[in-house]
Amino acid sequence: MSDQPLKVTSVADYRKKREEGSLLSLPSGAVFRLRKPSMGDFFKQATGSDAVPDLFAALIMGQSPGQGQAMDAKSLVVALPEMVEKVIVATVVEPPVAIEASDNTLVADDIGFDDQVAILSFVMGDYASASNFLGQQR
Image (cartoon, rainbow, N blue to C red):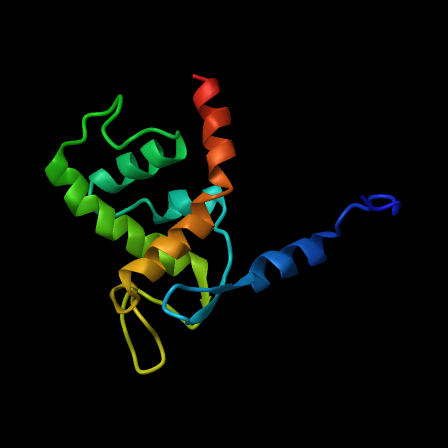
């Protein structure tokens, strides 16, 4: 523990640190700069197929998809890749990842499965405690 008194982080410093993100070494050996999306980022991304918002809600609430919801296996198969793509696009700062590829931009499908899982684990790690809290509020 430090004997330094705590100081409130300035708005500028907080925003800068959040936007800069963190370097993460992925299983493939690639190094990406990632930032943790806010809850608002998750909900902004929850568009597209009708099942994606249900899937986001289930994950945020710490539920298995379909638990307490009417989500069938077919909807899950449609929603999961779309959700993964949207989370990766919202999370990866560098190298650039977008919905549509270009010479200087990756798409989520360019990123290997193990690396995608590592990125999702980076994102969801801190949300476990939030989902426990939200689950207790029901």
